[in-house]
Length: 412
Image (cartoon, rainbow, N blue to C red; front, side, top):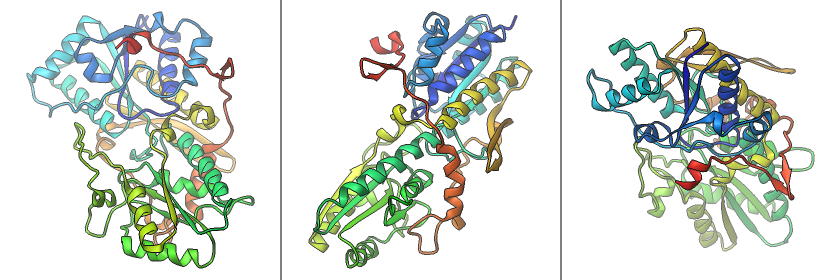
């Protein structure tokens, strides 16, 4: 029989992050773990002693299936930056003392870049003090910016949502015969994977957005307005997708022009909002037309009613693969996805040293963006399209999706 397991979730949630949690829980249980604990609100909550026995909350195969379809982080999340590793550090001593009290042998953390930084530091401290605890990272992020892995669970479902909603917004803009501009603001601080997914809307029944601007290419706002004006000479309804993290040629975020950035998290990330609003107001003012901004905001990461079956299946698989690797003695690693082929789409799991992943940001390759910096190429679409395929129908109760809720989290 294996020892005790603990799992936590960190960073921004996704529509399939709980599928990875289900993968960790089910695989650990099936492989003989004594107790599978969950941290409430990640490592920060763990430091405050907030831990639950997951077997008392997930009690049936039906619970596992509902959990897989439940959006956001079942265990809650945090953005907590561990200090730099040094022997005798009070924070690390506290963490390892709590792990010892719970008789933890395997530690799993589901998250993105900042979460892999946590796994890296815990692994390094374990080596310093000679701890045998195995630490494994389970990837997730809608931003798709984790290094080494082909893609990250959560991205495919967010891309599916973005492509779908973009089609619907474009359709809506065709209603009236007067000039109008719609600017879609899509998540993405420094990497434009999500914003590029708006191009999925283009097809036989939809021409797709007219322009797409990613953070990888600077945006001159005056040129932006002129490009919109040129489009208006050809058509009434103009739809543009832009990353929340779109930058000016001088390196500032476009949204900083609206003085709307005033919050910074534990990792030094500015809260970004207002890019589309600023540009829509500028277009309305200078072009004399109706212009609106639509921020997809948290909707793109919690739309579990339209998840990709490929995505939710892979999310479950990486959770299980992390347990398998740890139980076989691996530590300080993250599970990665390796694409075998696009057509037919095939992908396998592997593990990789977390030290080579943490704090490394994967951006959209320049060759996947057109020369003008206003759209993505077919290579980008060939990369994304397999990740949005098929659906997993929600379990419906009284006309609405049923979710699994952690009572301790709901009570605060």
